[in-house]
Length: 417
Length: 121
Image 1 (cartoon, each protein chain N blue to C red):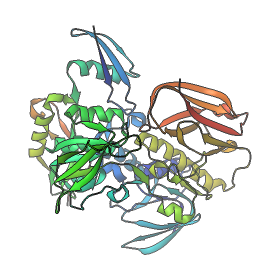
Image 2 (cartoon, rainbow over the protein chains, first blue to last red):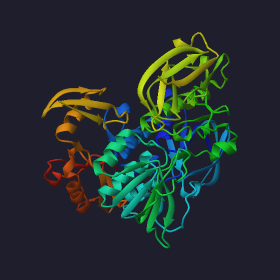
Image 3 (cartoon, rainbow over the protein chains, first blue to last red):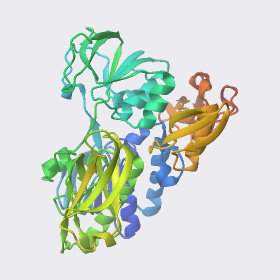
């Protein structure tokens, strides 16, 4: 089999990358490989609204947002295969399997990695206690409720205040469950402030910061969990234990980009994001292999995933056309005080087709601080922000002209007042 | 004079809005970055509303549930009544995005519409 560009994954990132690549060059043959039996990825189970305000200037639900992209595929001649699992990726080919074709290889000019991310499961959290039924990741519960129409429990404790956990606190409450509390290990929430307001405050669900689950009880099914307050080193404080009766524990403790394919292909991974190291074109350390969306770094806004993936798709289309790797100056982007990582990691100035968007997350909560951009040690931009939290992705946009003098290094940092 | 601090829920920017009130009169709205934020703040201090998103049972479809939403936001204190009506309802496949599944949900005068397409078996 042959294609100009193979897109691994048909969720929001894959759809946007495919569409932009096709619009960049209509003659390209683009193939999306999707392991689920429908396109749209995780958007299918995100039935809540709030998607698309940046992209479509209206408030859509997840399935509606996905449909806006899916309906463009046919007109652009983009092919897709469902129920198809990619097994291996290299710079010139992708190996996949499905029940019709068996194992097959697609030779291609470029690959765009759009595999998304997965939830951190119980096994990765080190929660002591028994192993009864009734412990779910928030996303699994979301699928059960919203797609299968099945309630996973009636009395719920949620560990972790990531957005999916908050959304599920509201969803379970609407469906008649009693959500007793949301415990968050950190002294701040990992989710968006708006979700704390509309998912917890609206329903009087307590958010217990600096709290964690220290024991799970129940033989066949969860009967209760024990929670406790933790100190600055995340150690439970003796005497603060409370036993809460419940039949269900939902986990919303972070998302991890799903990079098994990238790793086995030999793509360099950034330990801070668990996603590939990329340049301004979203190209990984392997020429012709691009990455975008949650497989690159976890986003809180699908609109940003679509925008970023559009850039990646256009870059892949240009790569197939031009082949040549860019020559010329390379600017390194470094993360300074308070900044956990940046995407991209470096910029090839000659390859920059428009403004440079640098996205990053902070490592802590900062109030009334400044986001600073330094070119070779000199402050180029300083923007005041009333609040910066690890739960909300930040960005700075640099104009192409700003980079004309080609600094050798751009540093992004947070300066406290 | 009373000051109320709100977080706008219209988009993920989550603007922090301060509404200054004198009794029932809104004197000023500050901190919003768009018109939606202004409207949200005015509604929120007087009669808060929320869009309800959930699922409805489907018969004869490729899936058993279809996602849906109230076409406009409903009064916050009506959310559970709206849920009760939706949970008792069902619809027949095929369903297209935007199809009206319930008219005048729980006496709010607001439609419930499908947010996903479901093909028939």
